[in-house]
Length: 148
Image (cartoon, rainbow, N blue to C red; front, side, top):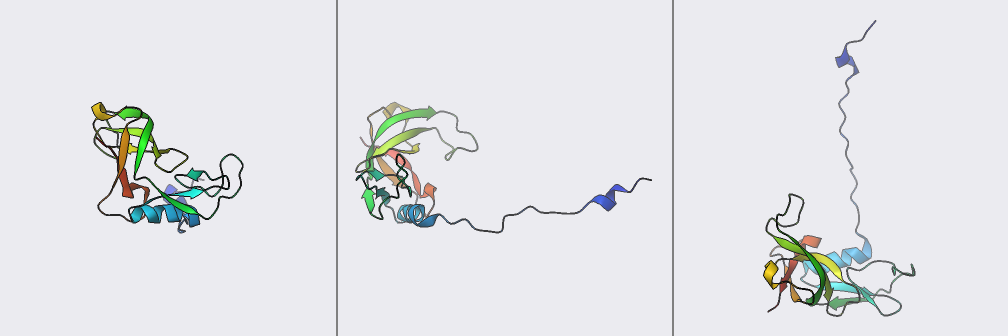
């Protein structure tokens, strides 16, 4: 005996009804971006991590609660050019992914450089460009532009 298939159908919507917290460290970093600031956190050894983490990457020790404003300028340490951005890229125009070592930071930060390829080189100085409307998201930092 076979059962009709429509008797075996049950509508179901998979959803995640909770909200994820960014925590006190990343939350403060994102609030800084919203306010047009670049913030790092100082480790017990005095290094400044940008973006900040809750734990020192080499020892696993908790970082201090001292936030440090860095940048807004920095130096490109390495980069790669994206001529044809895809649908998942952060911008729809050609750009570079770059490791930017912000002034005052001990670690580089991966982000977008929005300047023409011809102006980009290892060692180039860049300046942060913030989005016009900011909400506390990584995209509040629209990217970096080469300083001429």
